[in-house]
Length: 67
Image 1 (cartoon, rainbow, N blue to C red):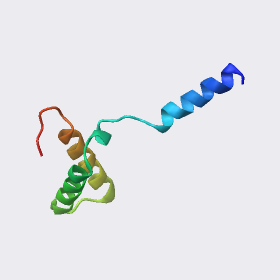
Image 2: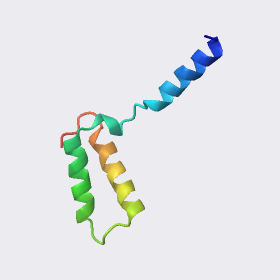
Image 3: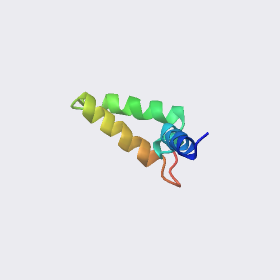
Image 4: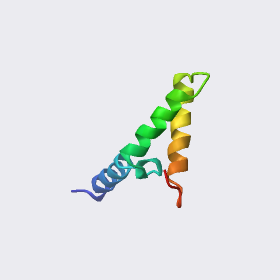
């Protein structure tokens, strides 16, 4: 195999498995954030809800934060 093909494969693999802070939270925390977003009044539009949940997940992933 050519080294170029191997490097392209490794680069694609690195892009396929991103490690973000939001992926560090549990499914339980994710569901809690989604439920809290549903209770926000006035009701959030789709984009606002997505941003609200992302912010909630980011806050939950901070060190020392208990949920």
